[in-house]
Amino acid sequence: MTPQNGELKALEAEVLYTPAELRQGHLARLERLIPEILPDQLYTYQHIFNRITQFKPDNGGEKLLSGRDILRELGRLLTTASASAPLEAAENVLSLFDVARRCRVAPKTVKRWALDGLPLADWSGPEGRLGPGVRSAALQQFLDRRQQHHAKRGRRLEAAETEAIGARADILAAQSEPPGEMIRRLAAESGYSCSTVRRVLNRRRREAAPTRLPGGLDSERSEELIALYRKDVPVADLATKFNRSKATIYRLLHRALIDKILTTTINYIPNPAFARPDADKVCLGEEGLFAYPPEESPDKAKTPPNRSSGSWCAATCGWSSASRNATPDRWRRCSTW
Picture 1 (cartoon, helix red, strand yellow):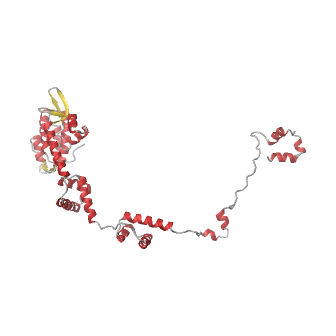
Picture 2 (spheres, rainbow, N blue to C red):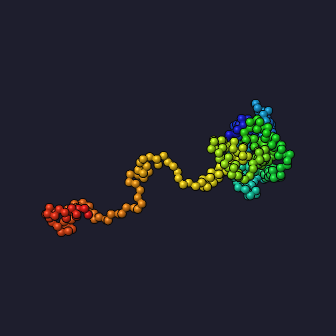
Picture 3 (cartoon, rainbow, N blue to C red):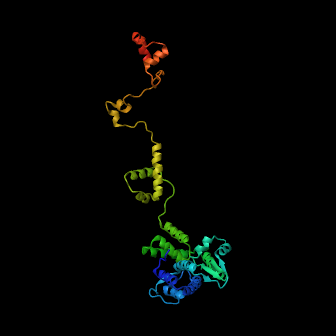
């Protein structure tokens, strides 16, 4: 994954392609800088570049970057770059699994925290490489900040804050801001979660919508609704006319049409075929219909396969083949079995 910001991409190239002896210093300063970045603040690219490399960037130094984006990209850069150039552990360093056990989370959660402000890096000590870990002081600083953030998010929204979020949403909507990006931006500015901001905007939208009357319609209104619907009046117009939502209109139509069908007695359904001279033949078919099923004919004896009827009858009845010409009626009856 590459940085989405062009300036941070240039910073990544500066750190990764620096000689090994200088890269250690860059990564050490990077690891110290991450806990100082506040997600809700804006920072110039020159400030970030100078804090890590101790130089000024060639261009784009005045561009403002959000702290949340900086934490995500710097956390990813620290994890990637320290894998090939581990930092030297000068103080107490907790391994990835020690942090997971202390915080009672999965190791994957700790890795996800690395993109949210936890300086997770590879370390090496006197006995060799220690693997990914975090300084205990940096971990405590991250947990304190996280607790403060959750405490702020957990409190109830005041009316003034709700109005401020709604007014800011109107401004962003007028600027054609995409809904998803607008919610993320409002969440970053207000300090609340995206779900909280989404609930505020949805409640505000419902309050601004016209009031929908509960319940169904009486028989006269139902007849009017069906008549308008059969005249191809759009459902949106029906919802406005009857002061209901579109889903309610569909439900009322379905219920009204079913009730109308169930209460209608059908005795006769005309068909043009009934008036034809040959209506019986057209409707009943060539053989017509019968009141009683036809009687089944009795089972007939079948000639065994691969045997002619004459030889089989002669063998069965004891007749000679010569008597066939003398008694043709007997052979005819036998052959019809």
